[in-house]
Length: 268
Image 1 (cartoon, rainbow, N blue to C red):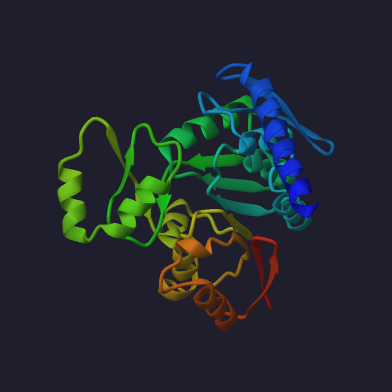
Image 2: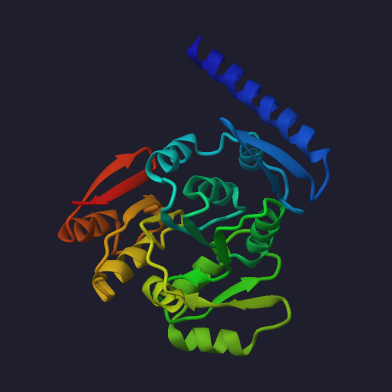
């Protein structure tokens, strides 16, 4: 009986998402969707990105509800916020709203094709207290190489992790018109460059949160102590894993709490 209900449930959800995706696909590429999160209304477009279940959740304002709730709890008017891994900008628009006219948001997205969509959403929502940057945040000295057709960062991340310096130099020298060399900076160098020192750092950057925490506390030992919220990507970690990050945070007088896939960190 349990197996029967599991099969029925599986069929139901397959059919549910098929219908949902089909409905939104009919809107066509570059359609501008009206999105609502509680009493906040804004617009999103996804360019020529294929409609998936994740995009449907964004359109309907129900993508990662736990993350959304945390943002609304910790971000207040007048704050300075750094968003790493802005993706299409669904949270960028929300954070811009939360910090208000006296606050400021700096949003970073590393994947060129995704950044172009972020840029469109930035424009159609007329964000006035937000700056967006297309660059890759890591502590690696290697160049970050994207294929012009990449709609996600994973291929570039894999190449970055696998190449040694000599291989990277060789690859960059053979770049064809099909590839893009992305700017790559460690976090503290970037913040120092733009003279922006956030009250809150939020990030969803596929394992490079290790580089961010290293840059903040190990390499530079910054004087200010922002609230930090990051999504955990344990499968992407190497020797420097989640335990390493939590130990480094603790050594710098942070307390932390895991909330689903996120870890929220406050300075004591």
